[in-house]
Image 1 (spheres, protein in one colour):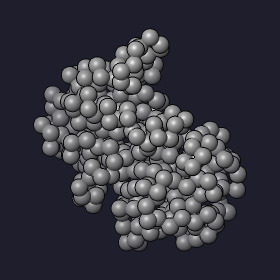
Image 2 (cartoon, rainbow, N blue to C red):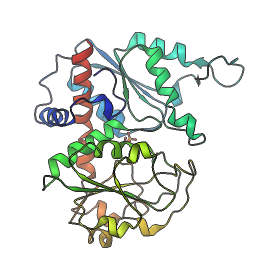
Image 3 (cartoon, protein in one colour):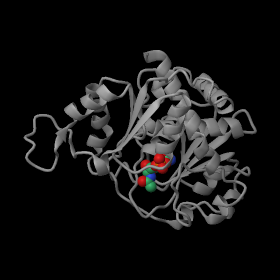
Length: 316
Ligand code: AN0
Ligand code: CP
């Protein structure tokens, strides 16, 4: 594996999942693998889980870790080519990424979409330029359209929790007060479409994901109908892809609570976090026995460690 940007960078999903679960049992077995190698974690947006779990994963493999909060500590980056930089941007991504590539053997990058121009966000221009100019392997810590380390942790969590060989997994839209990216649901859909699960997506009209991400998933607009017989319910808000970046509804009927769970096959409830209590998910769910959100966040270490191990093994 050279870069880790999407599920398409994984050649064998089942074996990578097994590898992550083996690392969970024996975290320090490969602590020589990353010796004298440096990973830089570059954040253009806030983070709790991604920052700490990826740092921990790299340390378990013996790597040195540098973290930089570009949004607060770095120079404002220019990404357009051929512009005269007489406004707010101070440094071009051509130099910034190249310099970081000199200091780091692997770079992790988080850069959210602006949610203004759909074409701009979905072109993944920032990530593609980072890959081009840094010259080193790049790991997505959430890009404009995907969050693959999260989706991989989600798959690991489903694998270790499922009670039937082919569980029914329902991705449900939930209300939120802000416009959030489609990256988490896009990515989750992309991974579930490749996993051994029956996958259903439910959301109000107007919240359809881009077809390249929803793929062959069953789309059900009636949430109660979608939840019937579900073994896993994955809760997430996202803004509209069609009416790009807009919040079309905040209908509280879509919040998961005990009444909704009663429709399922005693489903385990997942959420990538951070979650807004009382808006996306009821307290009774988060504090009750159906929630596996902490286990899910915990598995972020093993998804990151399995990915970094693969990159270290194939590049150095
Ligand atoms: C971000 C999102 O929805 O993409 C990060 C989730 C991991 N969430 C928020 O901005 C609240
Ligand atoms: N789930 C997730 O990526 O959380 P952070 O935004 O806190 O990293």
